[in-house]
Image 1 (cartoon, rainbow, N blue to C red):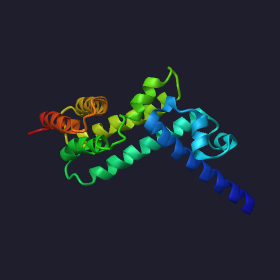
Image 2: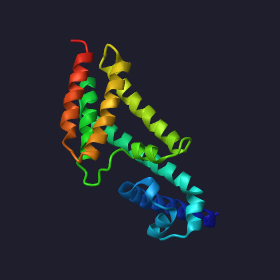
Image 3: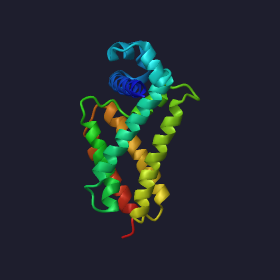
Image 4: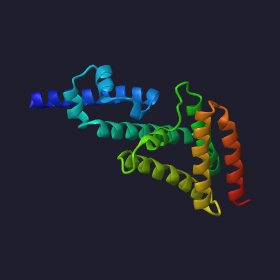
Length: 195
């Protein structure tokens, strides 16, 4: 029994290390630019441990995207605590997004870049769909709580703005994009809420 627990602990340590190393490489260079050999080399573990932990590249990428989704969700949930009203929370999502824009390593939304590089039917689409559902639900739930006249329409507008702000901040290298997106979000939200 003790040997099994030790093996399980080692396997989990290897999994965490591999995912951490892969995340760093994927964040800097992009998912499809990083080979498994590079991940193995940087993690300094045998290929068999990667295969045991993830089965292969596809599952490693899926785990990475789920990790990023979890971190984004956690950052948003934690950030929204400081906003008092549903209206403020709707607009606050853009302030929280803007914090990422200010990071020196910001390279846009990992889900956008992963999907852009994936082939149709790729498993990346499945994890991206989970992220997209969460994002749409986030704005919809906040729009409902704010009593927007048309919460679905407002949510769709804000998702579109969120996506565009992320792409603009990345491609134009403009962390200040958050000021524009926040201003537009404020106008959209105020127009959609009862007076």
